[in-house]
Image (tube, rainbow, N blue to C red; front, side):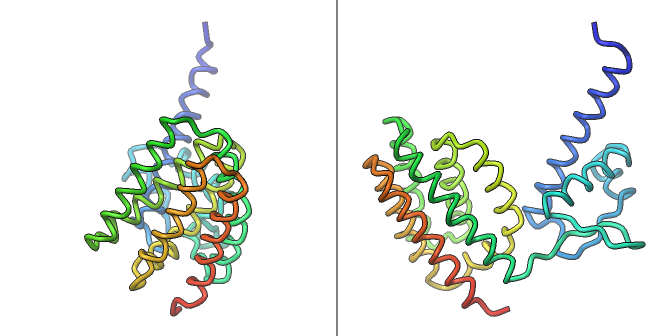
Length: 221
């Protein structure tokens, strides 16, 4: 039977994980703006957890690159510059290419059906002009490919990278005509995975991220 100290430690760890996930989600969702101060007392009240739990969560999110600590001023949401967003996309190009190739090797018939379903939903969203829905489907597709790939280390790397880049990705989705370009690129990735062609899937994934990088460079600051 666990001791009181072990139970208390487990409770603290669970709280830390929960509050870390909650603040991370709020940042990614845009509830907290870039450069917005993150006050421990306010977050403690907002999420109903201890200030110690908030402090540990902010430390972890600082390590993830979502939060930065300013001496004598506390923590704030880190604003990712365009240059950083491009660097992040360059790393994603390599890692997501690997995941696409592995997904093509491992995809089951059921998983292929899932990808085709997302492909069709994305086509409908673009045709109907539902930009926000398309953006959510875009994220769902990338997550599904990573899941199918079975690359757990890559999944963790990409989770952090995409979280840091979410604001720039959202701005990109709003560029006129960009969803149509992105749709064709995603379709190529899906077709290669469904054909179980690893090299073609990797090329398609890399081509898509190359296109993202080019588009990021053209977005007004």
